[in-house]
Length: 84
Image 1 (tube, helix red, strand yellow):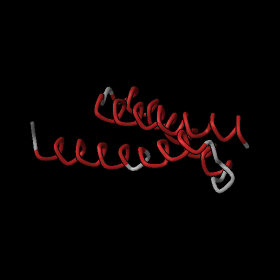
Image 2: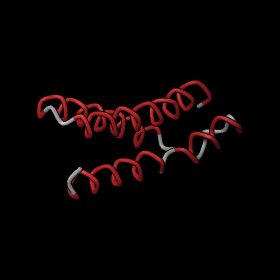
Image 3: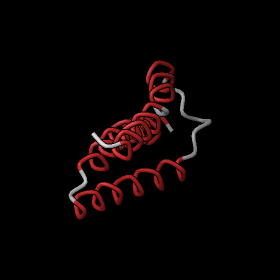
Image 4: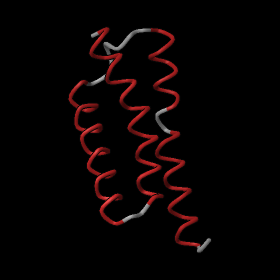
């Protein structure tokens, strides 16, 4: 694997893993009052667009990293919508 691909993999892991603490905290506490609905709506939209971009380029690293991020941010968004 080329160094550019390794850098992309590391970036994908970091940006995806950054949401794990928020998902865990929100899941456990069921408290979403301090979470911005607008931010997560924009984030989910942006990540969905990144997935489309990755598919168009056939860059499965972009698709995979953003699919994982979409899963995590989607959980937080659903919890926000459910628990306000």
